[in-house]
Structure formats: C-alpha cells, structure tokens
Length: 359
Image (cartoon, rainbow, N blue to C red; front, side):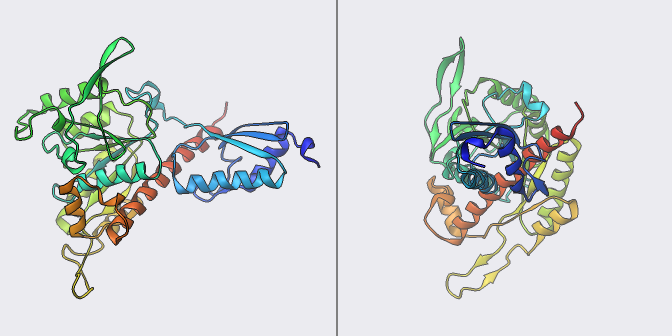
C-alpha cells in the first residue's frame, strides 16, 4: 500500500497499535481518536486528550506520530478536552481543568504545594492560573512576590477583574484586594459571597489549569468551591504525622460525599536531610501519606522533603520548583508531572466511558 492508498479508515486501524497503559486498551477502542482525515499525504488526527503538557499524554501523541511516520504520511495533531457534564455550564468557560489543593489540617504546607504545583505546571509550558481561596490566610501573593493591584477591564460589556501575573501564572487572591496588615474577620456567609463574586468577576481567559488553594478543614469555603466550580480533581496534602493524617482522611471523605475526584495524596515535610552528616531524619514520622492513600484507595503522588530552601523560596517570592537543581525542586517537578498525568487519566477514562455508552 502506498502513501496515496492510505485512507482515513486505514490510518485509524493502524492507530490501534497505540496503547493507553492507564486504560488497559488501545486509543481507538478507548474512543480517544475522535477524528482522522488523510489528504495529500498529511493526516489530521484529533485526540481526546485533556491534560496539556502531561508526560503520559505527550508519549501517546508521540506514538501516534510514529505510526503515521511508519505509514509514510505527515501528521497534524490536535486535542479536544472531554468535558465533564458539570463543566458544560461552567462559570469558567475558558478553563480546561480545575485542580483544588486541600488539607484537613493547617500547617502542613498546603499553600506551598499549591504555589509550586501551579508554577511547576506553568514551567512545563501550560497556561496556568492560581486562585487563592484561603480567604482567612491569603499568603499566596507573598509566596509569588506579587503585590500589583488587579486591573479592571470591560469584557463582553461587563467590568471584569484582570488578574495580575507572577512567575508565568495568572493570580487572584483576597490578599490582593485588602491592605497587607488588615485581618480578614469574616463570618462564613461573607466569605462565601466574596468567593462567589470572584468566581464570576475574574477574567481568567483561556487556561489549561486553574489551581485553587483551599483553606484547611472542611467548612463553608470548601463547600462553596465544590458547589460552584467544576473541579476536575483534588490534590490532598498531609504530613506524615498521625494527627495530620487523621484530619486529612476526613477531608478525603468530604470530597467523596460531594462526588469530587481525588487525584491523590501528597506527603509534605516527609524527611529532613542533614546538610552536615547527610542522614535523613523523619521529624514528623514516616509513610503517613502513603498509608492514608492506600487506606482510602486513592493514588499516592509522592513525598516532598523538609528543606529550608522551600521556606526561603516562599519568603522571597520564588517558588522552589523553578530553581535549578536540588532534591526539593525535583520533587515538586515530579509532583507537577504526576498531577498532570492523573488529570489526563481522569479525562481519558471519562471519554472511554462515553464511547462505550449506547447511542
């Protein structure tokens, strides 16, 4: 068969050689090949991939190119996001994926994880926004060195808040709307209404990921986010100690009650490497995050070391994930890749289920 003999159906059949290990089948059977058009030696292939810059989806796309190259034709790939039903009427129409970062207990480094996760995704090439929903402790702007007041622009005839940018991220936080030393003393309904207004008033534009930093616990703000935003999935942060793990377990159960997907558990402050002797000291215990993930049957996303450089980066407005070298920077980069991969699995599995439903 020559290049000119290859039809749309021929190429689609060849693409059955491309497996999706996470789904346990090939991409055609899984319904991930949504369109194929071969014309003049070039194939336009549309794939239902919804996690931009995820390593696993990049590998799938590369295998598609290899199959097309083997058939002697060039390939133009495009990706379509398989939306969940809740996202179809989203208040965030230009946002492909919403990732909430949560913890059951304060002091576990949740905001640090959220900032470095967002910066890590942006560093991979994604368009990323970071929404600081921790209204009572809005310190994300400080962690990013951001102090610019948000601008207001007219979009579709309405005044909308234009989020400032820092480290390649679009950022919105209550901390940008109040004076630095002003305490946030709000009753629950006020916090809920403020967040709801921000959901509707911020002009995020087109984003691959919006990372939402939730306050600790399982209160009004968390419920407001879950009820108003199309959350793709949640990253749950804990430290190894049993007190933090117990509170985090309750947070995971809350997400289950609201049918929110948990992308996985990450263990922060997992171990301190002594700079003098090189020994690792488990200051807060060990394996609490992995044990929690196994007990509630969600993925374990890995561990993040207790490293003074992480604290220094947060104080200086420089996310550690964008620094050169170091175990902590590498661990946060691995976390960003793992979260993107989990989002991709979630999206592709949803597409597979849709393709299997009877018409």
